[in-house]
Length: 102
Image (cartoon, rainbow, N blue to C red):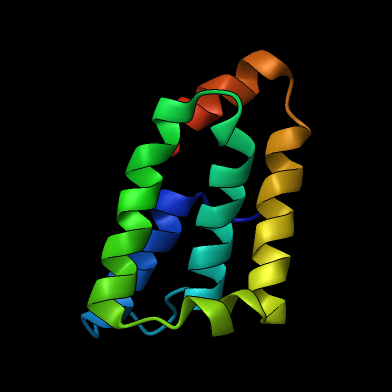
């Protein structure tokens, strides 16, 4: 089961701080965030702003190369898993997931 983006960001933050040996790679973090943003943008546009802000902070703090990350298999796998997870939910649950993703 894929981690929610908020969990991926926490893992990325711990990795950046050198506190977690098994933190999620940046590709998974960005893929999960982008997947949520993609699905939730049309459902509840306000719910994606915190995710966009988290992604921006992660890019700035970790100096991520988003273009390279988004070309990776790990990114694509995390992105597809998150999109599929959200789209498989009934609409009401999907809305709730979007509103509580961050």
